Image 1 (tube, rainbow, N blue to C red):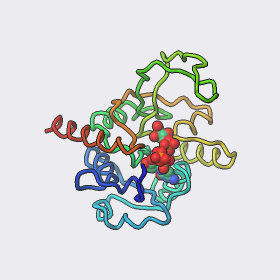
Image 2: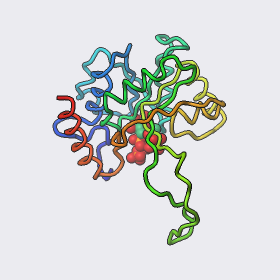
Image 3: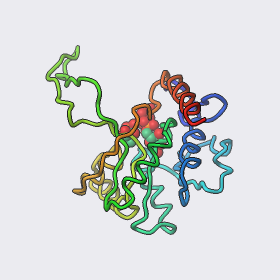
Length: 220
Ligand SMILES: Nc1ccn([C@@H]2O[C@H](COP(=O)(O)OP(=O)(O)OP(=O)(O)O)[C@@H](O)[C@H]2O)c(=O)n1
Ligand SMILES: C[C@](O)(CO)[C@H](O)COP(=O)(O)O
Protein backbone atom coordinates (compact mmCIF):
# COMPACT_ATOMS: atom_id res chain seq x y z
CA UNK A 1 0.00 0.00 0.00
CA UNK A 2 3.06 2.28 -0.01
CA UNK A 3 2.18 3.33 3.54
CA UNK A 4 4.01 3.31 6.87
CA UNK A 5 0.74 2.44 8.60
CA UNK A 6 -0.62 -1.11 8.41
CA UNK A 7 -3.42 -0.91 5.86
CA UNK A 8 -6.17 -1.84 8.33
CA UNK A 9 -5.40 1.45 10.12
CA UNK A 10 -5.55 3.68 7.05
CA UNK A 11 -8.44 6.15 7.20
CA UNK A 12 -11.45 5.99 4.93
CA UNK A 13 -13.28 9.24 5.53
CA UNK A 14 -12.86 9.75 9.26
CA UNK A 15 -12.80 6.05 10.23
CA UNK A 16 -10.19 3.34 10.37
CA UNK A 17 -10.56 0.75 7.62
CA UNK A 18 -10.71 -1.91 10.35
CA UNK A 19 -13.62 -0.15 12.10
CA UNK A 20 -15.55 0.06 8.85
CA UNK A 21 -14.98 -3.62 8.11
CA UNK A 22 -15.99 -4.68 11.61
CA UNK A 23 -19.14 -2.61 11.61
CA UNK A 24 -20.19 -4.06 8.26
CA UNK A 25 -20.05 -7.47 9.91
CA UNK A 26 -21.35 -6.73 13.40
CA UNK A 27 -24.06 -4.20 12.60
CA UNK A 28 -25.63 -6.25 9.83
CA UNK A 29 -26.01 -9.64 11.43
CA UNK A 30 -26.26 -11.06 14.91
CA UNK A 31 -23.19 -13.05 15.88
CA UNK A 32 -22.36 -14.63 19.23
CA UNK A 33 -19.08 -12.70 19.18
CA UNK A 34 -16.11 -11.61 17.17
CA UNK A 35 -12.40 -12.36 17.52
CA UNK A 36 -9.91 -9.96 15.93
CA UNK A 37 -6.33 -11.19 15.40
CA UNK A 38 -3.87 -8.38 15.97
CA UNK A 39 -0.25 -8.13 15.03
CA UNK A 40 1.97 -8.70 18.08
CA UNK A 41 3.41 -5.19 17.58
CA UNK A 42 0.03 -3.50 17.03
CA UNK A 43 -0.04 0.06 18.45
CA UNK A 44 -3.32 1.32 17.03
CA UNK A 45 -6.09 -1.05 18.14
CA UNK A 46 -6.73 0.89 21.36
CA UNK A 47 -7.68 3.94 19.25
CA UNK A 48 -10.38 2.13 17.29
CA UNK A 49 -14.13 2.29 17.89
CA UNK A 50 -14.21 -1.51 17.98
CA UNK A 51 -11.84 -1.71 20.94
CA UNK A 52 -14.68 -0.37 23.10
CA UNK A 53 -17.27 -2.81 21.70
CA UNK A 54 -18.05 -5.62 24.13
CA UNK A 55 -18.91 -8.02 21.30
CA UNK A 56 -15.29 -7.91 20.18
CA UNK A 57 -12.35 -9.82 21.65
CA UNK A 58 -8.76 -9.82 20.44
CA UNK A 59 -5.91 -12.30 20.23
CA UNK A 60 -2.39 -12.21 18.81
CA UNK A 61 -2.18 -13.09 15.13
CA UNK A 62 0.75 -14.54 13.20
CA UNK A 63 3.06 -14.01 10.25
CA UNK A 64 0.53 -15.06 7.62
CA UNK A 65 -3.21 -15.07 7.38
CA UNK A 66 -3.40 -18.79 8.15
CA UNK A 67 -1.53 -18.31 11.44
CA UNK A 68 -3.80 -15.43 12.43
CA UNK A 69 -6.95 -17.43 11.70
CA UNK A 70 -5.64 -20.45 13.56
CA UNK A 71 -4.75 -18.26 16.52
CA UNK A 72 -8.29 -16.78 16.56
CA UNK A 73 -9.81 -20.26 16.54
CA UNK A 74 -7.50 -21.31 19.35
CA UNK A 75 -8.59 -18.27 21.37
CA UNK A 76 -12.23 -19.28 20.86
CA UNK A 77 -11.70 -22.85 22.01
CA UNK A 78 -13.38 -22.45 25.40
CA UNK A 79 -16.36 -20.61 23.93
CA UNK A 80 -17.17 -22.60 20.79
CA UNK A 81 -18.61 -26.05 20.13
CA UNK A 82 -17.28 -28.17 17.22
CA UNK A 83 -20.43 -27.74 15.14
CA UNK A 84 -20.71 -23.98 15.66
CA UNK A 85 -20.29 -21.85 12.57
CA UNK A 86 -17.39 -19.43 12.27
CA UNK A 87 -17.14 -16.79 9.58
CA UNK A 88 -13.65 -15.59 8.68
CA UNK A 89 -13.43 -12.17 7.07
CA UNK A 90 -10.53 -10.04 5.80
CA UNK A 91 -9.93 -6.75 7.57
CA UNK A 92 -9.06 -5.49 4.09
CA UNK A 93 -12.59 -6.08 2.72
CA UNK A 94 -14.64 -3.14 4.02
CA UNK A 95 -17.31 -3.23 1.29
CA UNK A 96 -19.19 -6.35 2.32
CA UNK A 97 -22.87 -5.96 1.42
CA UNK A 98 -25.45 -6.97 4.03
CA UNK A 99 -27.35 -8.95 1.38
CA UNK A 100 -24.27 -11.09 0.64
CA UNK A 101 -23.67 -11.71 4.32
CA UNK A 102 -27.21 -12.85 4.97
CA UNK A 103 -27.37 -14.98 1.81
CA UNK A 104 -24.16 -16.75 2.80
CA UNK A 105 -25.44 -17.53 6.29
CA UNK A 106 -28.92 -18.53 5.14
CA UNK A 107 -27.75 -20.69 2.24
CA UNK A 108 -25.26 -22.65 4.33
CA UNK A 109 -26.93 -22.91 7.72
CA UNK A 110 -27.90 -26.59 7.29
CA UNK A 111 -24.88 -27.58 5.23
CA UNK A 112 -22.45 -30.08 6.75
CA UNK A 113 -19.27 -28.35 5.49
CA UNK A 114 -19.92 -24.68 4.65
CA UNK A 115 -18.60 -22.45 1.92
CA UNK A 116 -17.61 -18.99 0.85
CA UNK A 117 -18.65 -15.89 -1.02
CA UNK A 118 -17.12 -15.89 -4.49
CA UNK A 119 -17.53 -14.06 -7.78
CA UNK A 120 -17.46 -15.70 -11.22
CA UNK A 121 -14.47 -14.52 -13.25
CA UNK A 122 -15.59 -11.94 -15.81
CA UNK A 123 -12.44 -11.35 -17.87
CA UNK A 124 -10.75 -13.55 -20.46
CA UNK A 125 -7.83 -15.20 -18.67
CA UNK A 126 -4.31 -15.60 -20.04
CA UNK A 127 -1.68 -17.92 -18.59
CA UNK A 128 1.79 -16.41 -19.03
CA UNK A 129 4.79 -18.39 -20.23
CA UNK A 130 7.05 -17.33 -17.33
CA UNK A 131 9.38 -15.37 -19.58
CA UNK A 132 10.39 -11.71 -19.53
CA UNK A 133 8.56 -9.90 -21.05
CA UNK A 134 5.58 -12.06 -20.20
CA UNK A 135 3.95 -13.59 -23.24
CA UNK A 136 0.74 -15.54 -23.55
CA UNK A 137 1.17 -19.27 -23.14
CA UNK A 138 -2.53 -20.17 -23.28
CA UNK A 139 -6.00 -18.70 -22.84
CA UNK A 140 -7.63 -20.39 -19.87
CA UNK A 141 -11.23 -21.59 -20.03
CA UNK A 142 -12.92 -19.34 -17.45
CA UNK A 143 -16.35 -20.98 -17.48
CA UNK A 144 -15.89 -22.65 -14.10
CA UNK A 145 -13.53 -20.14 -12.49
CA UNK A 146 -14.52 -18.02 -9.50
CA UNK A 147 -12.65 -15.48 -7.39
CA UNK A 148 -12.66 -16.39 -3.70
CA UNK A 149 -13.95 -13.61 -1.45
CA UNK A 150 -14.70 -13.46 2.26
CA UNK A 151 -16.49 -14.15 4.58
CA UNK A 152 -15.82 -17.87 4.43
CA UNK A 153 -18.06 -19.94 6.69
CA UNK A 154 -17.12 -23.28 8.20
CA UNK A 155 -17.75 -25.42 11.28
CA UNK A 156 -15.46 -24.48 14.15
CA UNK A 157 -14.16 -28.03 14.74
CA UNK A 158 -13.60 -28.92 11.08
CA UNK A 159 -11.87 -25.63 10.28
CA UNK A 160 -9.60 -25.90 13.31
CA UNK A 161 -8.61 -29.47 12.37
CA UNK A 162 -8.05 -28.57 8.72
CA UNK A 163 -5.81 -25.59 9.53
CA UNK A 164 -3.92 -27.65 12.11
CA UNK A 165 -3.20 -30.28 9.46
CA UNK A 166 -2.14 -27.69 6.89
CA UNK A 167 0.21 -26.02 9.34
CA UNK A 168 1.74 -29.27 10.54
CA UNK A 169 2.21 -30.61 7.01
CA UNK A 170 3.56 -27.29 5.71
CA UNK A 171 0.76 -26.79 3.15
CA UNK A 172 0.46 -23.18 2.11
CA UNK A 173 -3.16 -21.98 2.11
CA UNK A 174 -4.33 -18.45 1.38
CA UNK A 175 -7.96 -18.97 2.41
CA UNK A 176 -9.97 -21.23 4.71
CA UNK A 177 -11.69 -23.03 1.85
CA UNK A 178 -8.31 -24.29 0.58
CA UNK A 179 -7.69 -25.95 3.95
CA UNK A 180 -11.05 -27.76 3.84
CA UNK A 181 -10.44 -28.70 0.18
CA UNK A 182 -7.13 -30.29 1.14
CA UNK A 183 -9.02 -32.40 3.69
CA UNK A 184 -11.27 -33.69 0.89
CA UNK A 185 -14.28 -31.40 1.46
CA UNK A 186 -16.14 -29.53 -1.28
CA UNK A 187 -17.09 -26.08 0.07
CA UNK A 188 -20.08 -24.37 -1.56
CA UNK A 189 -19.53 -21.26 -3.72
CA UNK A 190 -22.14 -18.64 -2.90
CA UNK A 191 -22.19 -15.91 -5.53
CA UNK A 192 -21.27 -12.56 -3.99
CA UNK A 193 -20.92 -9.04 -5.35
CA UNK A 194 -17.69 -8.33 -7.23
CA UNK A 195 -17.42 -4.99 -5.40
CA UNK A 196 -16.51 -6.80 -2.15
CA UNK A 197 -12.94 -5.76 -2.94
CA UNK A 198 -9.74 -6.46 -1.00
CA UNK A 199 -7.78 -3.26 -0.40
CA UNK A 200 -4.43 -4.15 -1.94
CA UNK A 201 -3.05 -1.13 -3.83
CA UNK A 202 -3.41 2.61 -2.96
CA UNK A 203 -6.04 3.26 -5.63
CA UNK A 204 -8.32 0.69 -3.94
CA UNK A 205 -8.96 3.18 -1.13
CA UNK A 206 -10.73 5.65 -3.43
CA UNK A 207 -12.61 2.79 -5.04
CA UNK A 208 -13.73 1.52 -1.62
CA UNK A 209 -14.94 5.03 -0.65
CA UNK A 210 -17.01 5.14 -3.80
CA UNK A 211 -18.48 1.66 -3.20
CA UNK A 212 -19.26 2.45 0.44
CA UNK A 213 -20.99 5.68 -0.57
CA UNK A 214 -23.15 3.68 -2.99
CA UNK A 215 -23.90 1.04 -0.33
CA UNK A 216 -25.02 3.71 2.13
CA UNK A 217 -27.39 5.31 -0.38
CA UNK A 218 -28.71 1.84 -1.39
CA UNK A 219 -29.64 1.04 2.19
CA UNK A 220 -30.96 4.54 3.03
N1 LIG B 1 -0.51 -12.06 9.00
C1 LIG B 1 -1.74 -11.82 8.53
C2 LIG B 1 -1.94 -11.41 7.19
C3 LIG B 1 -3.24 -11.19 6.77
N2 LIG B 1 -4.28 -11.35 7.63
C4 LIG B 1 -5.67 -11.13 7.22
O1 LIG B 1 -5.84 -11.53 5.89
C5 LIG B 1 -6.46 -10.49 5.17
C6 LIG B 1 -6.11 -10.57 3.69
O2 LIG B 1 -4.77 -10.48 3.54
P1 LIG B 1 -4.13 -9.18 2.92
O3 LIG B 1 -4.74 -7.98 3.52
O4 LIG B 1 -4.11 -9.25 1.47
O5 LIG B 1 -2.77 -9.43 3.57
P2 LIG B 1 -1.37 -8.98 3.33
O6 LIG B 1 -0.69 -10.12 2.68
O7 LIG B 1 -0.91 -8.53 4.66
O8 LIG B 1 -1.45 -7.69 2.40
P3 LIG B 1 -1.06 -7.43 0.92
O9 LIG B 1 -1.86 -8.36 0.05
O10 LIG B 1 -1.45 -6.00 0.72
O11 LIG B 1 0.42 -7.65 0.85
C7 LIG B 1 -6.05 -9.23 5.89
O12 LIG B 1 -6.92 -8.18 5.62
C8 LIG B 1 -6.12 -9.69 7.33
O13 LIG B 1 -7.46 -9.66 7.78
C9 LIG B 1 -4.03 -11.74 8.93
O14 LIG B 1 -4.98 -11.87 9.70
N3 LIG B 1 -2.77 -11.98 9.36
C1 LIG C 1 -8.89 -14.84 1.66
C2 LIG C 1 -8.69 -14.09 0.40
O1 LIG C 1 -9.01 -12.73 0.55
C3 LIG C 1 -9.65 -14.64 -0.64
O2 LIG C 1 -9.48 -13.99 -1.85
C4 LIG C 1 -7.28 -14.18 -0.11
O3 LIG C 1 -6.98 -15.51 -0.42
C5 LIG C 1 -6.27 -13.61 0.84
O4 LIG C 1 -4.99 -13.79 0.28
P1 LIG C 1 -3.76 -12.87 0.65
O5 LIG C 1 -2.62 -13.49 -0.09
O6 LIG C 1 -3.62 -12.94 2.12
O7 LIG C 1 -4.08 -11.51 0.13
